[in-house]
Amino acid sequence: MAKTQKKDEGKSASIALRRTLPHNLEAEDAVLGAFLTDSEILAENLAKMTTDDFYSSANRTVFECMKELGAKNVPVDIVTVTGKLEKDGRLEEAGGLERIEELADTLPSSANCEYYISMLKRDALMRRIIGTCSGIIDNAFTLDDAQKVLAIAEASIYGIGTDNQRGELVQIGEPTLEVVDKLSEVFRTKRPATGLMTHYRNLDRVTNGFMPGQMIILAARPGCGKTSFAMSIATNIAKYSPEKVVAAFNLEMSSQELVQRILVSLTGIDNTTLIKGEETHEELQKLFEAQRLLAESNLFVDDTAAQTAEEIMSKCRRLKAVKKRLDLVIIDYMQLTNPSKNRDGNRQQEVADTSRFLKMMAKELKVPVIVLSQMSRDIEKREDKTPMLADLRESGSIEQDADMVFFLNNADGDNEDTVEKKNVSLIIAKHRNGATGTIYFVFDKKHMRFSVAVNKKQTDSVPAGGEKAPEAVGDLAAELNGEEEYYVVDDDYAPVGEPPVGEPPEGDDYGFSELRDSADFVPPSDDE
Image 1 (tube, one colour):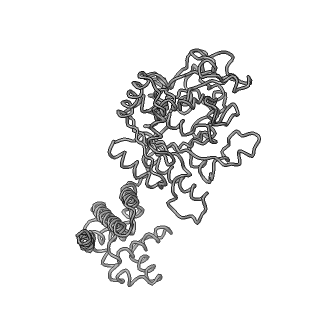
Image 2 (cartoon, helix red, strand yellow):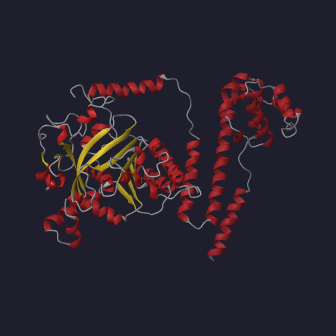
Image 3 (cartoon, one colour):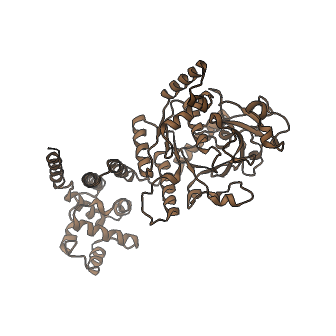
């Protein structure tokens, strides 16, 4: 029964695809005739047309000849077209000399040419949709992986839409007006234009938020907490901007593991306590409150292993279509994505392909994408283990594609996983539109939580509102061997409604002084 139904469906699809494809030969002849007789129409429209806009093979041959002549700045008329076709041995393919002469006489009015072109574009788009659907049907019958077929189908249909929305040259006054409007708004409000805020005020002051289309690379050696840091950003957004849609792809751990980490971070309950069921009634209430917060948020997680970048984009596209927005994508991590192309074992090229595709995804979906990345083992061979761009594992073009590259580094030099609380520096190694430098956090591994901190080297006194690290986050003094001290500025996330960008409290720069001294840094206000 099922086999018979599948056979009948295939037969119906085959019959549908054997129908005559949309076309209008009279409109095709009219357009070619206009090109042969009116140089202005030719100059205005030749570059807009493609061979695929024509259904007739003879008309396609004539148009190809016109494109070749136009590329060489040769006038396009009956004489030059027939001469080139004859020289190339394609005159009969184009219908012969009489056919070319007939084309020049078929146009009722050259003023209607734009309308005829729109007809050709419409029919060409219809033919492409039909052809794409035919390919999707073939894949559905021949491939076993339904998810792969779906991803290919969505990418194919989406490709038609994006290819059909090519940009045009615009007079520079139009984008200039948009930019000046934005700058005048900044001047009026005295607040810089911002993107998506992480609610870590030291980071937000450097980046002014993550902008649509940006690819942000986050890398670290094992034990520094890069997954926890990325998910802390997602958690902050879920907590303080629940209307924003965040898609998090973790290719290494399950959704349950990821959610448990988020709950630990939100509630401050020891992970071991939760595992053993030793939490108090008060802590259990916090757990339920955190669950409600997450349930009301727009944070989506996916733990499917071995996905391709195309499959990730397909899921993001669907989420954006359903939710009518997409504000952030997190991928943990790049080297675990499956290559979409077989590069014969050239892993560096496969990672480079993935990096390039994810950057294209960020631009097409107009969303910032945070991509976690492994680091090369070569860093372990150096005496100074401070990360550099060259340390990105199988880097290829990762640093070239990225708009920002962040390295999490254990600032106290201790890389042991057994250390529950450690000083962590976030090294901004690349910032395409801003300054590079280092800002500071304390990573409380027990509670999967990062707190904004200030290095003692950057300030002579305890920041306003901050406390010495041993009092705020535990016995760090012994871990630091008395060489450095850190101060916690925010022992929790930024309060709701408090602007993450702006002037810090008096005497407190959130670890920003090193960046402020950078030659290419522009202060956020005149009072800085």
